[in-house]
Length: 270
Image 1 (spheres, helix red, strand yellow):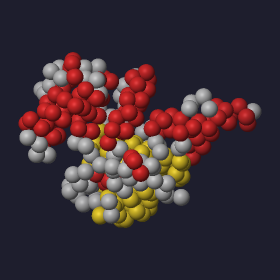
Image 2: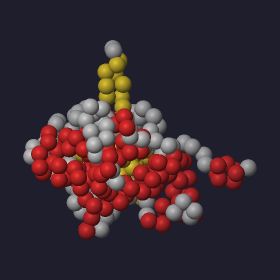
Image 3: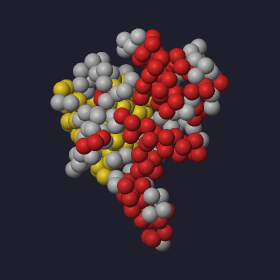
Protein backbone atom coordinates (compact mmCIF):
# COMPACT_ATOMS: atom_id res chain seq x y z
CA UNK A 1 0.00 0.00 0.00
CA UNK A 2 1.57 3.30 -1.09
CA UNK A 3 -0.97 5.82 0.16
CA UNK A 4 -2.67 6.61 3.43
CA UNK A 5 -5.99 8.13 4.32
CA UNK A 6 -6.35 11.91 4.23
CA UNK A 7 -6.00 13.83 7.49
CA UNK A 8 -9.01 15.74 8.79
CA UNK A 9 -10.31 18.38 6.32
CA UNK A 10 -9.60 21.16 8.83
CA UNK A 11 -5.85 20.60 8.40
CA UNK A 12 -5.74 20.72 4.60
CA UNK A 13 -3.49 23.62 3.77
CA UNK A 14 -0.76 21.68 2.02
CA UNK A 15 -1.16 20.00 -1.34
CA UNK A 16 -0.73 16.40 -2.45
CA UNK A 17 2.76 15.12 -3.31
CA UNK A 18 2.91 12.00 -5.47
CA UNK A 19 6.15 10.09 -6.00
CA UNK A 20 5.45 7.83 -8.96
CA UNK A 21 7.93 5.06 -9.86
CA UNK A 22 10.90 7.38 -9.37
CA UNK A 23 14.39 6.11 -10.12
CA UNK A 24 17.62 8.10 -10.00
CA UNK A 25 21.35 7.60 -10.40
CA UNK A 26 24.60 9.55 -10.25
CA UNK A 27 27.80 9.27 -12.23
CA UNK A 28 30.86 8.40 -10.13
CA UNK A 29 33.82 8.60 -12.50
CA UNK A 30 33.35 5.98 -15.21
CA UNK A 31 30.62 4.09 -13.34
CA UNK A 32 26.98 4.76 -12.57
CA UNK A 33 25.66 4.64 -9.01
CA UNK A 34 21.96 3.75 -8.82
CA UNK A 35 20.38 5.53 -5.84
CA UNK A 36 16.60 5.17 -6.12
CA UNK A 37 14.65 2.42 -7.89
CA UNK A 38 10.91 2.55 -8.64
CA UNK A 39 10.02 4.54 -5.51
CA UNK A 40 6.28 5.21 -5.18
CA UNK A 41 4.17 6.72 -2.41
CA UNK A 42 1.71 9.56 -1.90
CA UNK A 43 1.62 12.21 0.83
CA UNK A 44 -1.95 13.51 1.22
CA UNK A 45 -2.57 17.24 1.83
CA UNK A 46 -1.44 18.28 5.30
CA UNK A 47 0.09 14.89 6.17
CA UNK A 48 3.57 14.26 7.62
CA UNK A 49 5.56 11.46 5.97
CA UNK A 50 8.71 10.40 7.80
CA UNK A 51 11.26 8.69 5.56
CA UNK A 52 13.68 6.26 7.22
CA UNK A 53 16.31 3.99 5.76
CA UNK A 54 19.99 3.04 5.81
CA UNK A 55 22.63 5.76 5.43
CA UNK A 56 23.31 6.57 1.80
CA UNK A 57 20.13 5.01 0.46
CA UNK A 58 18.96 8.19 -1.26
CA UNK A 59 16.66 9.86 1.29
CA UNK A 60 18.23 13.29 0.78
CA UNK A 61 18.14 12.75 -2.99
CA UNK A 62 14.40 12.13 -2.70
CA UNK A 63 14.01 15.46 -0.89
CA UNK A 64 15.95 17.30 -3.59
CA UNK A 65 13.83 15.73 -6.32
CA UNK A 66 10.65 16.71 -4.43
CA UNK A 67 11.89 20.29 -4.17
CA UNK A 68 12.62 20.50 -7.89
CA UNK A 69 16.36 20.92 -7.26
CA UNK A 70 17.00 17.99 -9.59
CA UNK A 71 14.98 15.88 -12.00
CA UNK A 72 14.54 12.09 -11.69
CA UNK A 73 16.22 9.77 -14.17
CA UNK A 74 12.89 7.94 -14.52
CA UNK A 75 9.38 8.27 -13.16
CA UNK A 76 7.66 11.45 -12.06
CA UNK A 77 6.90 13.58 -9.03
CA UNK A 78 3.63 15.52 -9.02
CA UNK A 79 2.67 18.39 -6.74
CA UNK A 80 -1.00 19.35 -6.65
CA UNK A 81 -1.54 17.44 -9.89
CA UNK A 82 1.29 19.09 -11.84
CA UNK A 83 4.73 17.62 -12.55
CA UNK A 84 7.48 18.99 -10.30
CA UNK A 85 9.64 21.23 -12.50
CA UNK A 86 13.25 22.19 -11.93
CA UNK A 87 13.48 25.29 -9.75
CA UNK A 88 9.85 26.27 -10.22
CA UNK A 89 8.10 25.22 -6.97
CA UNK A 90 7.67 28.33 -4.84
CA UNK A 91 5.44 26.35 -2.45
CA UNK A 92 8.53 24.67 -0.93
CA UNK A 93 10.32 25.38 2.34
CA UNK A 94 13.38 23.39 3.42
CA UNK A 95 15.37 22.85 6.62
CA UNK A 96 18.46 20.73 7.15
CA UNK A 97 20.58 19.00 9.79
CA UNK A 98 22.72 22.13 10.03
CA UNK A 99 20.56 25.27 10.15
CA UNK A 100 22.77 27.01 7.58
CA UNK A 101 22.45 30.45 9.16
CA UNK A 102 24.41 33.36 7.73
CA UNK A 103 26.95 34.20 10.49
CA UNK A 104 27.10 37.89 9.56
CA UNK A 105 23.33 38.30 9.90
CA UNK A 106 21.33 38.66 13.08
CA UNK A 107 18.64 36.14 13.96
CA UNK A 108 16.01 38.57 12.69
CA UNK A 109 17.73 39.06 9.34
CA UNK A 110 18.35 35.31 8.94
CA UNK A 111 14.62 34.62 9.24
CA UNK A 112 13.70 37.53 6.98
CA UNK A 113 16.15 36.77 4.16
CA UNK A 114 13.93 34.20 2.44
CA UNK A 115 10.95 36.51 2.60
CA UNK A 116 12.89 39.36 1.05
CA UNK A 117 14.23 37.06 -1.67
CA UNK A 118 10.66 36.08 -2.54
CA UNK A 119 9.58 39.67 -2.97
CA UNK A 120 8.13 40.74 0.39
CA UNK A 121 8.76 44.38 1.15
CA UNK A 122 10.82 45.31 4.21
CA UNK A 123 7.85 46.12 6.44
CA UNK A 124 5.94 42.95 5.55
CA UNK A 125 9.03 40.78 6.01
CA UNK A 126 9.67 42.37 9.42
CA UNK A 127 6.09 41.69 10.53
CA UNK A 128 6.13 38.04 9.48
CA UNK A 129 9.60 37.54 10.98
CA UNK A 130 8.47 38.97 14.30
CA UNK A 131 5.47 36.61 14.37
CA UNK A 132 7.58 33.51 13.80
CA UNK A 133 10.33 34.53 16.21
CA UNK A 134 7.64 34.88 18.86
CA UNK A 135 6.21 31.50 17.89
CA UNK A 136 9.59 29.76 18.39
CA UNK A 137 10.34 31.76 21.55
CA UNK A 138 13.29 33.74 20.22
CA UNK A 139 11.99 37.32 20.17
CA UNK A 140 14.51 38.44 22.79
CA UNK A 141 17.35 37.02 20.66
CA UNK A 142 16.37 38.77 17.42
CA UNK A 143 19.51 40.95 17.50
CA UNK A 144 21.84 38.07 18.38
CA UNK A 145 24.22 36.46 15.89
CA UNK A 146 24.35 32.69 15.19
CA UNK A 147 27.60 32.26 17.15
CA UNK A 148 25.77 33.52 20.25
CA UNK A 149 23.08 30.80 20.04
CA UNK A 150 22.94 27.27 21.41
CA UNK A 151 22.50 24.41 18.94
CA UNK A 152 18.81 24.11 19.77
CA UNK A 153 18.22 27.83 19.37
CA UNK A 154 19.98 27.85 16.00
CA UNK A 155 17.74 24.99 14.84
CA UNK A 156 14.69 26.98 15.90
CA UNK A 157 15.89 29.88 13.74
CA UNK A 158 16.30 27.51 10.78
CA UNK A 159 12.80 26.10 11.29
CA UNK A 160 11.36 29.61 11.73
CA UNK A 161 13.01 30.71 8.48
CA UNK A 162 11.46 27.77 6.61
CA UNK A 163 8.01 28.21 8.15
CA UNK A 164 8.01 32.00 7.70
CA UNK A 165 7.72 31.38 3.97
CA UNK A 166 4.40 29.69 4.79
CA UNK A 167 5.29 26.75 2.54
CA UNK A 168 2.61 24.36 1.43
CA UNK A 169 5.32 21.69 1.09
CA UNK A 170 7.89 21.46 3.88
CA UNK A 171 10.96 19.28 3.28
CA UNK A 172 13.18 18.45 6.25
CA UNK A 173 16.51 16.61 6.23
CA UNK A 174 17.27 15.44 9.79
CA UNK A 175 16.75 18.92 11.25
CA UNK A 176 17.21 17.79 14.88
CA UNK A 177 20.10 15.34 14.42
CA UNK A 178 22.87 17.71 15.53
CA UNK A 179 21.47 18.54 18.99
CA UNK A 180 21.53 16.62 22.27
CA UNK A 181 18.79 14.11 23.14
CA UNK A 182 16.91 16.37 25.56
CA UNK A 183 16.91 19.33 23.14
CA UNK A 184 15.81 17.01 20.36
CA UNK A 185 12.74 15.88 22.31
CA UNK A 186 11.89 19.50 23.11
CA UNK A 187 12.25 20.54 19.47
CA UNK A 188 10.03 17.65 18.37
CA UNK A 189 7.26 18.84 20.69
CA UNK A 190 7.62 22.44 19.51
CA UNK A 191 7.67 21.34 15.89
CA UNK A 192 4.38 19.47 16.24
CA UNK A 193 2.80 22.62 17.66
CA UNK A 194 4.18 24.73 14.81
CA UNK A 195 2.75 22.40 12.18
CA UNK A 196 -0.74 22.93 13.58
CA UNK A 197 -0.52 26.63 12.68
CA UNK A 198 -0.29 26.17 8.91
CA UNK A 199 -0.63 22.40 8.24
CA UNK A 200 1.79 22.07 5.32
CA UNK A 201 2.42 18.77 3.61
CA UNK A 202 5.67 17.44 5.11
CA UNK A 203 8.40 15.02 4.06
CA UNK A 204 10.70 14.50 7.06
CA UNK A 205 13.91 12.48 6.61
CA UNK A 206 15.29 10.96 9.81
CA UNK A 207 17.45 8.10 11.07
CA UNK A 208 15.61 8.16 14.40
CA UNK A 209 12.71 5.67 14.39
CA UNK A 210 11.17 6.96 17.68
CA UNK A 211 11.22 10.45 16.13
CA UNK A 212 9.43 9.12 13.04
CA UNK A 213 6.73 7.53 15.20
CA UNK A 214 6.35 10.72 17.24
CA UNK A 215 6.04 13.09 14.27
CA UNK A 216 4.77 11.12 11.29
CA UNK A 217 1.28 10.29 10.09
CA UNK A 218 3.03 7.44 8.35
CA UNK A 219 6.57 6.11 7.91
CA UNK A 220 8.11 5.31 4.54
CA UNK A 221 10.73 2.61 5.12
CA UNK A 222 13.42 2.52 2.44
CA UNK A 223 15.76 -0.35 1.53
CA UNK A 224 19.50 -0.26 0.91
CA UNK A 225 20.71 1.44 -2.27
CA UNK A 226 19.30 1.42 -4.87
CA UNK A 227 16.45 2.21 -2.53
CA UNK A 228 12.87 1.15 -2.99
CA UNK A 229 9.95 1.30 -0.57
CA UNK A 230 10.02 -1.67 1.81
CA UNK A 231 6.81 -0.80 3.61
CA UNK A 232 4.55 2.10 4.52
CA UNK A 233 3.59 2.05 8.19
CA UNK A 234 0.63 4.14 9.33
CA UNK A 235 0.90 5.87 12.70
CA UNK A 236 -2.17 6.53 14.84
CA UNK A 237 -2.44 8.78 17.90
CA UNK A 238 -2.24 5.86 20.34
CA UNK A 239 1.00 4.69 18.70
CA UNK A 240 2.84 7.81 19.94
CA UNK A 241 2.62 6.93 23.66
CA UNK A 242 6.10 5.53 24.33
CA UNK A 243 4.82 3.53 27.31
CA UNK A 244 2.15 1.73 25.26
CA UNK A 245 2.11 -1.67 23.60
CA UNK A 246 1.02 0.07 20.36
CA UNK A 247 4.22 2.14 20.35
CA UNK A 248 6.36 -0.94 21.03
CA UNK A 249 4.66 -2.71 18.11
CA UNK A 250 5.30 0.16 15.66
CA UNK A 251 8.91 0.43 16.83
CA UNK A 252 9.46 -3.30 16.39
CA UNK A 253 7.74 -3.35 12.99
CA UNK A 254 9.81 -0.45 11.68
CA UNK A 255 13.10 -1.83 13.00
CA UNK A 256 12.28 -5.22 11.49
CA UNK A 257 11.79 -3.58 8.10
CA UNK A 258 15.22 -1.99 8.53
CA UNK A 259 16.76 -5.35 9.35
CA UNK A 260 17.23 -4.59 13.04
CA UNK A 261 16.10 -6.93 15.82
CA UNK A 262 14.75 -5.08 18.85
CA UNK A 263 15.86 -6.03 22.38
CA UNK A 264 12.33 -7.25 23.10
CA UNK A 265 12.40 -9.61 20.11
CA UNK A 266 15.84 -10.87 21.06
CA UNK A 267 14.69 -11.61 24.59
CA UNK A 268 11.70 -13.51 23.23
CA UNK A 269 13.90 -15.57 20.94
CA UNK A 270 16.07 -16.56 23.90
